[in-house]
Length: 300
Image (cartoon, rainbow, N blue to C red; front, top):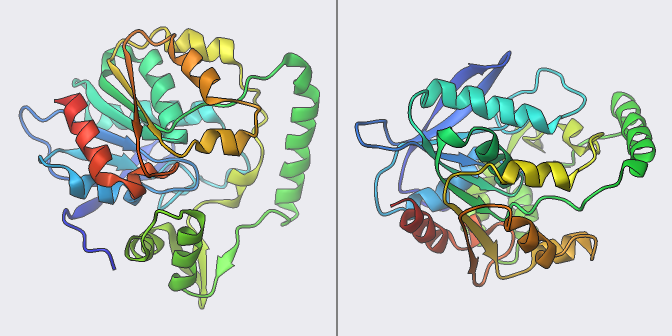
């Protein structure tokens, strides 16, 4: 099992009718800018443990489990709407940093939330770091009928019990799944992550701590012109961190390319792009020392 170096503690904060689970490392203090870490889709806040352990300095770190992930329930939602993450983050900062700009870090989906939030509340962000948060392919208004119909069909399937998350017969099986999905992930880290990524909900069966409704396709189209309008409002210096393995190209199969992503970044006033070698999309697992060094250099 991976030996952690920095111990976290859990807090539960009421946010927009939900009891949000927040994982914290360190303590607040004078002169400490809060460091806020936002995890990605089908992930949990504990996922940042390896980067936290690699940090050279002590920080007050705040990492929420998004609604419907980890130890934060959704309140019975059968769909998840992206703007909710923005409002959840806004309420989180109202609680922990009402008068202090924060250093904001997001991975994947969390990176997309961080980018949009930084353009909507620019005064609240001191430094912005996006880890592999690439956005989505552009859409056209003509896609709306098919998208909404598809969404309704999946909601129906969800309530019929047809959309479920896979279960595993042991924690080792969960760890093996994590390692299989990421060739860079060592088994000691996979076993540690499995303890936080899943739970034995039914005796003898471990279930991923992410609600099945997250599998439902969003009813919202991704409108790049709107996203770029928000990007133009980002005032904080921004660091875009990419993995050497071009996971985006493999995932989207030509629908959305790294070159198109870089073109979108031109809408951000102050942006630096860095590529981390020998890692994939989960670069905070694969190269935590390199990620931590980049993070500390940028927020110093």
